[in-house]
Image 1 (spheres, helix red, strand yellow):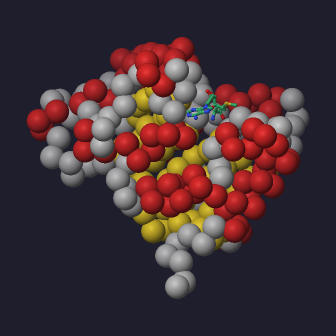
Image 2 (image 1 turned 60 degrees about the vertical axis):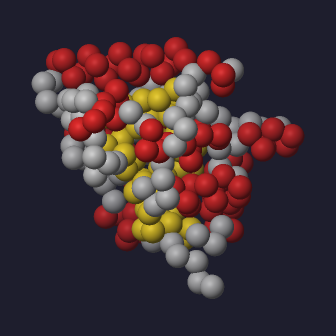
Length: 221
Ligand code: SAM
């Protein structure tokens, strides 16, 4: 349960020297000027982080994952990549945490430029919809953590969940859909279906996917 993993009391208490030791050799050298910009929520085995690491070598990213063993696997995977490729993969890390509870403990207002929700658990039954990682209530939190212009990416192979995520984002006053041209120009949007382990499994099985990409905006008041 949640009581078994440490939770930072505030974003300023997230220990960057633990996550990115080469970039932050000690915690007192962390002057707070460089912050995590991308968050992969429910990162699973970490395929997206690994793809994005070399695409955006100057950007700090973190995966958030609830399962202990999966988190440990991702840690080991990143360490092995760092050893095999000196100087690379220093900008990615993973935290074992419940993203539905602790996003505000990790990120301050407007900190993130991208959030990813790739193949989240569908929670089919109506009574379990409150456990879905996209909901109107959680979108308030994500809007808080994202900078204006920041982007939320979602993809699923479950049509009903895809419609649900799209409806939530469409109804939320602080998000607007990217246009086709925006999507064409975005190198990350192309990766959603292929970078993660779950996406590769769906692709192997020839499954359909449903993708939504929305931008954090200032609402018209
Ligand atoms: N995004 C990965 C991919 O595309 O391969 C993993 C997809 S997997 C179907 C969903 C993941 O979300 C699981 O690894 C699960 O443990 C994680 N997860 C579910 N609820 C979570 C929560 N509240 N906080 C963090 N991770 C969560």
